[in-house]
Amino acid sequence: MNTTSFLLLRLGIGISMFGHGLVRLPKLAGFSKWMVTSFEKSLLPSAIVTPFSYALPILEFGIGTLLILGLLTKQALLAGSIVMLLLLLGTTLIENWEALPSQLIHLVFFAILIQFISSNRWSLDYFLFNK
Image (cartoon, helix red, strand yellow):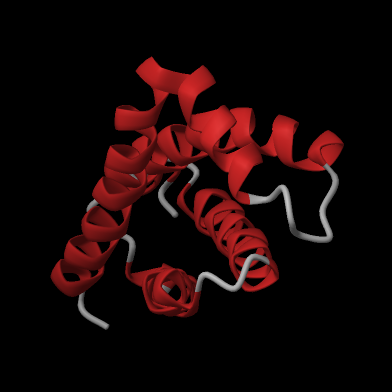
């Protein structure tokens, strides 16, 4: 993959994650309440859903910020992949089939970027650590 293509994909997934977190952070309590309500009839207890619902926007915002900057890119991509896998599990448990394609697409972006991490030249990682 050429460096410009990698940059565009990294920025795209980074902006998506950043935006998801950014719009949820100011209404964190409301977002958490919505998520806990969504999972009331699932197998997951609220003791698991509640902390995840508060952590998710922070993780999205942080992962997105790192990807936009190209800082700790590989770690951010791995963290983003784990977040997507957790979201996929949750989405299937509440049978929200409409959300699955978007989450799978995000996961594919993360996997592609991890595969071609050596093309991450337009990044703070490359300028600071030469990698």
